[in-house]
Image (cartoon, rainbow, N blue to C red; front, top):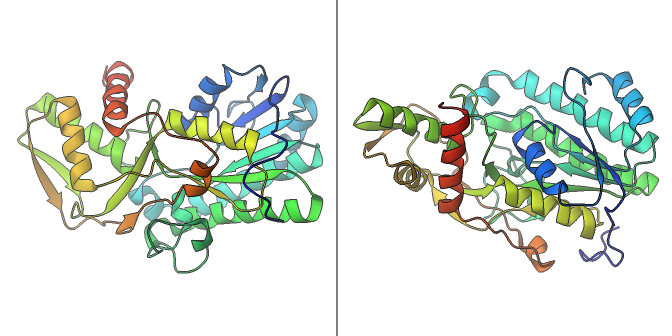
Length: 320
């Protein structure tokens, strides 16, 4: 049930109807940008048209629109604070949404499905860099375990459906993503957009300090969302196996270094001020993406390039 990562018969997207759930989110929009270069038809539905928590509604949507390819990018996501204060939402909503879509894909004969997980599925103290085999080998990071459990369930559902029904459902695990259409709300955002928003505020105010949660010591890996979208389509075409596949850049920085790099990218001259009362999260999170790299895929956007272009987007669309 675990073939070579090289699919001997690549899946052809040409002429296919491709449904991207969560197409208005950061990852979904990046997927739509990449799919615009493909000879395929994209199928979408906004939240007002389709509630993914409504099982009957999802079944009707699949019956009416008949997608042949499904990429599950829809998810309830957030940073440490959001995960820590709304555990029920992150567990329940993600479980229900992904279950409804995967179930409908089976019922309506979808040819290929790619489920997107998250690097937080791995144990808090997993050996670094984190290999796919590390899944379920230790306790999760407590600040995001509810979201992680939901995503693990999605991975296992795709594996179970492959085993029982012989369907071509796969899973990809992206690392920490950033880019245009990220969430810059300080109450719910992840570390990179939160730092960018705070750095911008400090620059506008002429503040001497840039506040940073925690010690600044944790190591994190970041990937531009356009690189992630290219990797997802690459896997949709070229991978057919039971194991989930890591999608990462292979480069990591400390939170301190990230804050310094963001400050430099936006032209902020301020001293970093670390708030030790705030949690650090996992001490290190680096994905081992050797399986993906062995297939010939490579990221294209460096962190410096990605931060510069993301800040330009932020200025035009958020700060304006």
